[in-house]
Length: 568
Image 1 (cartoon, rainbow, N blue to C red):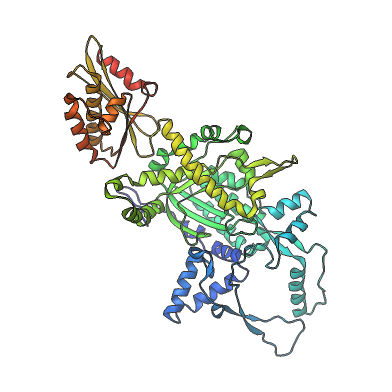
Image 2: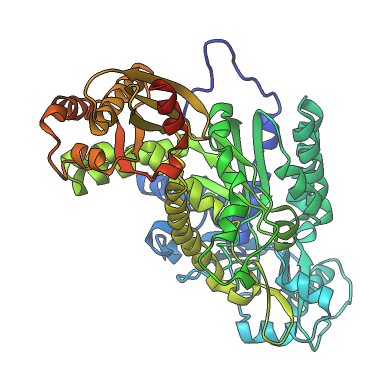
């Protein structure tokens, strides 16, 4: 983890311990399996019994369950590790009864519906029940923020409670045994505490947008209506960046409907955020150029705010492999009206690049090609992946004319297919940006040109940053009266200037094809240009990334115009 200090400022956030309280950890633990909190407490309590018990607790803490997320959810504990609980209730009063101890054995196969549905419910029963519901009831059943329960189980629990206290209430049966229960009621004990803490945190911060988000998210925890707080999160403009609430649906592998709780707290990296703003602004352009039928394209894609942060703390649904970015919210009602917002976790990305990608590259890529494996390219690919979650079809019309969403129709397949879509469309977007002449984040573009006429001859170049802004222009005159000589001279001089400016990632563009092929050793340069080609080759090794490509004159107008001024 990085040190969040610099030479002039030490960031102090007195409410950080408040909003990072452990209440949300228990909610997420309960999401996974109904007795997961008991197993968590049991393993923690016995973690000091032996080295093996400590390892069990450590790996459980990583996975937040007895199933390993790195091993296709294979159980890494046995039923012998199950928690021992005391059942104190009885169906009738028994003098001297203290209760019965029993082991809470977890299933070896992870429940596909996690703890969002009754463990004995299958998809057929759910669909039959759903078909009997009114529209608003159906939205709750398939929505993000309601669990599905059984009347019979709830009544049985109430009956046992009543028996313990001497009441004669009976179990009530129901033709439709299933019903929806809002998260605000199911997790009321935890969310009430979390809402209280978020409200306190909101009182402590001076940031108006953060204050607004924390208070509205506290209200959402109690009301189960997350719309306003999601909008407030998208509009967050604070040095301390906070994401907290139920978002991703990966845990629900039965339908992919239900969201789990998570929290990410970080320090916004203003420089990095400014650099990648262009990606969010280009979403509508990407949407309109998608290689699919126009009927599936949205005509009103909202520019996506992108925030780059240095992660300080995370909790909840963050088990196993650590995320490097996220694009939220997932609620299609908000996506259609307001779009999405992206958060990039730069220090996590840097750690993955250094500790995972580079060692793999050391084994799989030849030594002379490894210089092209750089962090900016890795980070840019992640940005494109996240951007492409926000484009493409979301709300759709079914053959019968009914309105629906891609998520509801794909059900449990949606998460995997959505990630695959973002991967492949992200690669397409990168190619699109390159064709548009836009350099990758952190790289610069050197556009050069040589010119000669009856009056004189010369060369020039323009250096642009990722946003297309000019950061340097140069020119020179004299020498051979041939265009290729001045084209190569411009490349040579431009690369020297880039090194002097510490610009180590460069894309060079020239509209003179023969000059490009000479530098790339596709054809032999004229004898009077050999010194320039040798000089360029020596400069190559000083860049972390360099490419020299041919561009048509239409994409080279700035350098072409500057060159015309040189020879006037």
